[in-house]
Amino acid sequence: MQTNSNTEEYDYIIAIIGVGGIGSAVVSELVRALHRGELLQSTKNITIWIYDSDRVSAENLAHQRFSASDVGEFKVDALARNLSEFTGPRLSIEPCAWDVRSANDMVAADLTVVGVDSHLARRVVHSCGGLWLDLRCGVDGYIALD
Image 1: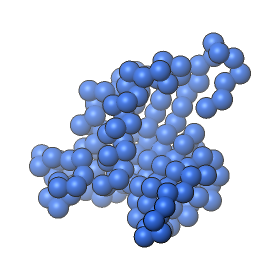
Image 2: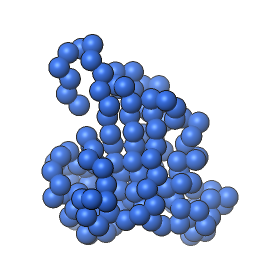
Image 3: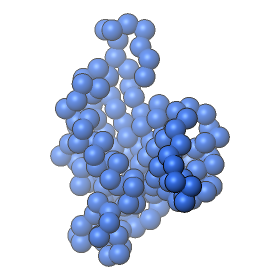
Image 4: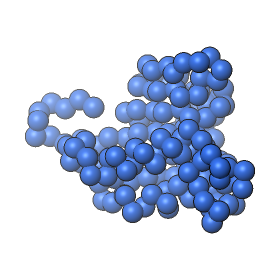
């Protein structure tokens, strides 16, 4: 985020594509870290947009940030609800229960984090420009940051 002066405040948008094993951990830790942090105090608002069309299943409980009471619910809705105690007027989560298949499926963000195994979603994010962090580079054995 770039500012023109130390006294100006700006909105900051973060998009997380996929909230399974990787994405649910990233969102959980990010929201907890931001809710009282210096970055939040230096902005008007931070909005975290989370995208995933999957529902929580019993198989997800061992390795994703969900509980048994979340089974059957959209992952994005369960995660947003579970983190609601850390959100407020200046930090919010926007759950989007759909897949990213084109640039029109997501908002323009200051940072986009890819945590989904969809090659199509990854190509969309990589081709949109902007700052992105790909945490799902398959079996390539690396993380790509643009």
